[in-house]
Image 1 (cartoon, rainbow, N blue to C red):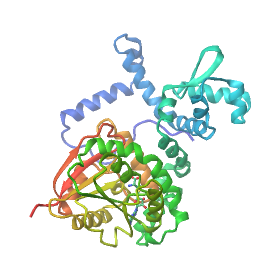
Image 2 (image 1 turned 180 degrees about the vertical axis):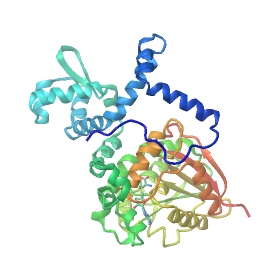
Image 3 (image 1 turned 135 degrees about the vertical axis):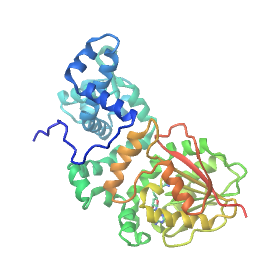
Image 4 (image 1 turned 180 degrees about the horizontal axis):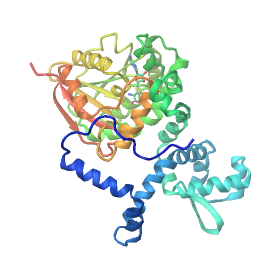
Length: 391
Ligand SMILES: C[S@@+](CC[C@H](N)C(=O)[O-])C[C@H]1O[C@@H](n2cnc3c(N)ncnc32)[C@H](O)[C@@H]1O
């Protein structure tokens, strides 16, 4: 079925007066919707580069799901790892990936077009600049692999928006749905938490780098990482600020994994507590508590309860660090609002929030001095700091 792209007439009457910015946008849209204007802009030398870039952006939206699946295939077939070992010819790559040669050539051409691979001298193929960046961040490959679940949930995006229903992503993150439905996530077994915990551990280093470049922890006594997964964040903190005492709070099954992993890293000194942060008080003793990629997983009511629990666990003057990708982040709205907005819808719990909304929730829980700490890559995480009132 081909869906019409003609504008649908709004049922409600337009507002009496449009702001000048709205009027300008209406004019802009009329121009961009006009085939005659687009033809002119593409022909005129001064507007041609912009016209081409706009056409590319629109086409990227149309074809983006294919690009993502090319990347998924390249990673599944370990093509980027193979190219990282040095340039190779198509025939040997086809053999290594167990693909017919024409299919391998097609994948390689697609990867070259997307900057993942590139044609090299002597008819060989090498790693492209985007491929090199991906190889340098193993967490990204893990994220792409787990998108198989989201991809299936998005096969009918309108049904997802209308009805929700059972989704693969909700099964992937069982604590979210269990908690949102009033169940007890602290009963989850190792087999239910292992998959997502491994993904979080693989992708945490790139987030920790952003957070720890943005905050100063020198002078703090003890940090408690709430929902700290298998301990990848406290591991990064220990490497930066070795004198800091460290604690971690997690669901019992994840806490057990964290204990084992941290002991294996020589970090048995981290005190790991198992429990449910929505039902049990948090351990006392930390003067700074971190919530890294936690708040966006939960609906407002749960977030309010969690922030009150964090507030209660901190001493007067204590500090909360909240870090996650945020909605409305200039230059990163596609990630915050589009990717995480839809991702968390499929997960059936939580939403991306703007810093303003997070500030309101923090103030509602009693925090003061709420401020943003700029990160180098806000696309990966923004950071907000808040304080408990000094008595
Ligand atoms: C998105 S993961 C983030 C993990 C880690 N902070 C990171 O950034 O890698 C959310 C974590 O919160 C934990 N969690 C979710 N609900 C919880 C609850 N009610 N009590 C304790 N931990 C919980 C999950 O087990 C999971 O490890």
